[in-house]
Structure formats: C-alpha cells, structure tokens
Length: 351
Ligand SMILES: Cc1cc2nc3c(=O)[nH]c(=O)nc-3n(C[C@H](O)[C@H](O)[C@H](O)COP(=O)(O)OP(=O)(O)OC[C@H]3O[C@@H](n4cnc5c(N)ncnc54)[C@H](O)[C@@H]3O)c2cc1C
Image (cartoon, rainbow, N blue to C red; front, side):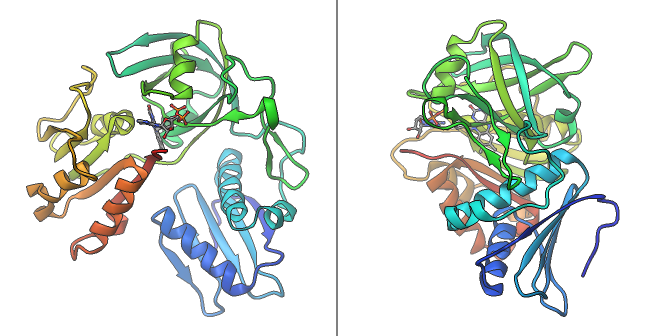
C-alpha cells in the first residue's frame, strides 16, 4: 500500500456494517466528488492523495477500514468529518456507531473551530455586505483552503447559545433543537495578519439567514467559524471562470493570484452589474456579465459558446446546484475535458 511518510498524524475508522464493495464504492464516490485520483494496489486497497492529507481504504482484513493521514490536526479533523458526514448520508445510525481512533479529546471544541468577533460590517454595493472579523490563527486562512463555515443561530438570534464539540466517537456533536446552528460556507476574501482581521463578502439575497445576520451584526458580535478548508487557488495560465454572485469572492481571490501574463475569461451570472470595484483582473482576463433571462442554465449556455474552450483552459465553475450538475454532465461529454484541470462545485441549492 502507498504510504505518505510526511503526514505524521493519523486516525482510523472501522467501517462496521459495510461490505468491501460498499466501502470501495463509497471511497470512489468521495474521490469523484472531490475531483481526486484514486489508486488501487494489488490487494485491492484504495488510496487517495492530496497535498494536505491521504486517505487509504484497507480491504485486507475482515472489515474494511479507512486510514487518514494528515499534515495538521485541523486537516485530520476536516477529512474525518467529511468522511463521517458522507457516511451519515448513506446511513446515519450506522455512521454514528463508527468510532474514529481519534487523537482528539471528547468534549472539547473541534481543532478547526474558532470563536471570532465582528469588527465591522459595511455595504460594498447593493449586492454584498463585507464582514470584517478578528479571530485566532489568522495565518491558517492564508494557506489552508479558501473557505470556512460560518456558525450562526438557525433561530435567527444574533449570538449562538452553544457551539460544536467532539463526541466520544470522534465525530462532531452539533447543538440541536432551539440551539441548532446554521452553517453556510463562505470564502475568505482577505486576511491582514498585522492588523489582525479577516474579511468575507456576504451576497445579499432574499430570505438568507446569513444575509440577515450580516445586517444585524455590530462591532463585538460573537460568531463561530469552522475552517479553513476546501478550494485551492488554481495555478493556470489559461482559465475559464464561470460563477454567480456567491462565487465572486472565490473568483476574486483566484484572479488576484494568477500570473500577470495569465489569460482567460470570467463569465459572471448576475441580475445587476454588481462587481465590487476591488476585483483586480490580470490584463489578459476579460469579464462578461451574463443575465439570467429565461434560460434554465444561462451560465452554462454562456460557457458553451466561449471561444476559450477551443484552447483547453482550466475550467472553474461554481453556481446553483442544478446548473452545476448540468455543467458537469456537459463537460464530461467534451473530449478535451480534464477533470484534474477543473473545479466544478455547487455553491447553493434553490428551494
Ligand atoms: C465553497 C463555497 C463558497 C461560498 N462562498 C460564498 C461567499 O463568499 N459569499 C456568499 O455570499 N456565498 C458563498 N457561498 C454560498 C452560500 O454558502 C450559500 O448561498 C448559502 O446558502 C447562504 O446561506 P444563507 O444563510 O444566505 O441562505 P439560507 O438561509 O441557507 O437559505 C435561504 C433561502 O435562500 C436561498 N438561497 C441561498 N443562496 C442563494 C443565492 N445565492 N441566491 C438566491 N437564493 C439563495 C435558498 O435556496 C433558501 O431558499 C459559498 C458556497 C460554497 C459551497
């Protein structure tokens, strides 16, 4: 089996109740979901490598087991949680009984949980509220993934009564009932280590609990975060970026990190011309605003007619779930499409 000697931290989960076939299918699905390559050795063990963690599926014993190796406690916990959450989607009761051989102390906060405090909130334009917060470990947010989960009361209250803790089985115990938390994902827009703050942009949409929270929050408001995690900055010299308003913060960070001579196209789905003025595009990247109109998949329609497709660009696509699904199906039919040179993600679900 392939090993990753650099990753000293490790944790094991025995997949009680899962056959080898079910366990293999589960990991295959996870690898596909995260756009990762899966490797199989002669004994049928599977492994999946990322720059921050490796996941192995050992199928040689009586019961299949997952081994996670990671570069940091945050990352180990993040991968554990991701796997537990998806196992829970298959069978919540069975997943709840599975026990991580975890290095984490039951009852304490998860290692990637942070308490933060709002410094201020300002209206960037009619579409976005920019929230500036202070919290510990800010440097992690400059390198450890672009996103985090905001933990706010699901009830609409401003301040949470309780935050997540680590359970006896190594999995997160979330506050329930009236204390339940709403956990939307946001993108770290900017971090200033010297001045001690982090900023994220909240797209203002009707009925959004995070929108409402950001309109009520004042300097000193306490808020929980889980992260950072997910989404790395693609180092592409030719890139097609397509996203809606929720994807613009991530797109803004990506274009700021592209080489000065990078070329590409940014297709932005928006009802209004709502691009914050501080989005700095390299000279070779052009922007086109795409209107929603009457099409079911307006962003995908715009992608399909982009002349850049003929030059096999890196594909970055993030939007509403059904449009993302349609985009994935479309790209999979394209001969030139390389899943390893792509990021296709659902950023929200229309209900
Ligand atoms: C990796 C990732 C990064 C993200 N980064 C950002 C970011 O930086 N900034 C940002 O604003 N969002 C971002 N999002 C999207 C954000 O997490 C979702 O829009 C989330 O649902 C917002 O929660 P809410 O409390 O506003 O809405 P909820 O209270 O969860 O939902 C209320 C209603 O609003 C609808 N809804 C949710 N999002 C939208 C929308 N965009 N337009 C119209 N209706 C909507 C829902 O369908 C629901 O009916 C990101 C998502 C992901 C997966």
